[in-house]
Amino acid sequence: MAIVSRPILGMKRYLRRTIELAPIKVTVWNEYRHERQNEQVATIYPEGIHRAIAGHLLKNDSFEVTTAVLDDPDHGLSEDVLNRTDVLIWWGHMAHDEVRDDIVEKVRDRVLGGMGLIVLHSGHGSKIFQSLLGTRTGALKWRDDGEKERIWVVEHGHPIADGLGEYIEIAQEEMYGERFEIPAPDELVFVSWFEGGEVFRSGCCYRRGKGRLFYFRPGHETFPTYYHPDVLRVISNAVSWAAPAQGAAVSYGRTEPLENIGTGVRA
Image (cartoon, rainbow, N blue to C red; front, side, top):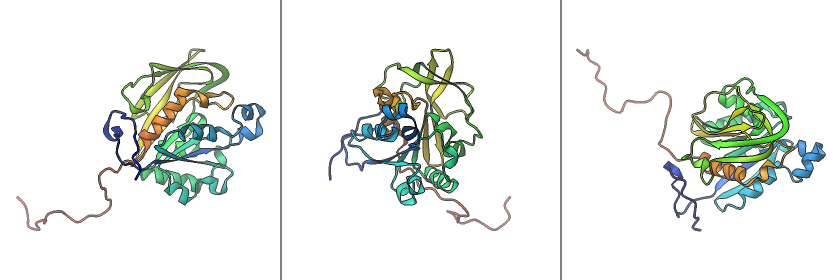
């Protein structure tokens, strides 16, 4: 069996040393509509946003990466694909309503069962994000003026921030501003500041059932954000963070007592 060396990330299951470990199976999902309908986007991402992200992740021997898009059969998310996925990365924007409800339920069940989910940028409007977080709209402010963004690290010891400086600077991006209609994150890793003055919770961690969910804000399709080395580093770190952990056994429903229960009247 091959020996895979993984970086030490510093806490709990992320203390990965040089041991025998199976690769993390990652599926990168994308609508893949903008790239086929908008010449500007096609120029930036000629093979699609999903392939730009997957191309970076494939450089890591710890990951086994496949891609899926909205117009694939079952949106590329059949039960077989989902059962073989440890972490699902989701990018959507213009066709949230076209994602079938039964597929959303299957993804939701897999996350509750332990699959990791990374939701990028406009995926805040996706059915799966809103279903898992219980938010009706995920509403926010926005402005597509291509302004500078600084993504400040506010939880420096978090594994998702591993290898970063104090902030990530992106020369041109779409602005997202507070109020962002989401539940308070379990952990807030990043906060963005924009040239126009707004701020935004840009790196939000949640636990849902046995699964982990990370929302990461940057990634508007008309800017080359998914070639930015620090943005790609965050996504790569998030894959390792969100990967399923074995954990303790759990059971539900009526259960037999571990000890004999007396039937007499107790004082």
